[in-house]
Structures are given as C-alpha cells and as structure tokens.
Length: 139
Image 1 (cartoon, rainbow, N blue to C red):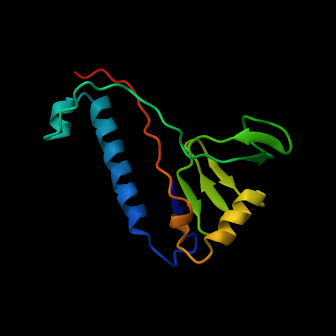
Image 2: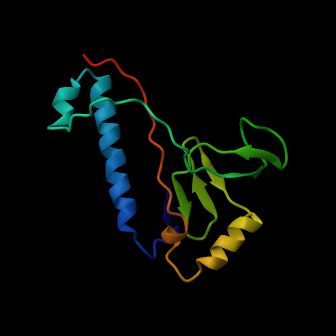
C-alpha cells in the first residue's frame, strides 16, 4: 500500500516504482492472454528450487460501510479487499475492488497519526502488498 497526495503537492518515488511494476504486470498478462510464451517475457529470470505457493496477510481496511454495492446496509462492519493506496489527507483509498471515501478514522488510526505526525506518511504505514497468484497455461 502506498500513500498518495490528492493535491499533487508532493511526489513519492515509491509510487512511481510500484506504478511501473504494475504496468509491466498488466503488459505481461495481456501478452500471455494473447499467446506469448513466458520464456519470451521473462528474460533471464532466477531459478527458484524447492518452491511452494505461500500466503501472507495483505493490508486492507476495516470499518463501518454505508452505500457499498455488494454489502448493503448502514454502518455495516466490513473488511475490504487489498488496500493499494491511501491519500495523504486520509480521505480516499482505492482497494483491489473499488474506491472508498473515508470518513472518521478509528481511535487506533488517530493515535497512529498523532504518533507519526512528524514523519512522512509512508513511515507510518510500512506494509508490504501481498502478491496475488493466478494460474495460467503457458503455450
């Protein structure tokens, strides 16, 4: 998950790095869909021996949702899909499935914000995005 500035007053190099990685992933996925062999896309990749698929928790949001298209109700407690970005003003958050407009944060978040008020926003939220594994049949 990354912090972004909705007013575009600052630019985080980490944002651009993740954006480029995602663009590359989308380009590779389109090529695979269109029949390109993985060996042509991979270049000189490292070899991974004794590998296994693993999972670790992904950063997400939890809160009380009103107006969700799939989880109806008022102030319904939910857990979102993976959180990708969070605006520096803490008003916007796109997840893997949709954007959220953020209201009042929980007391825990308010406490964290007070604790890290002097540090860059990214320092307060140093989380690693969980990878998503999708199977495909190479040609």
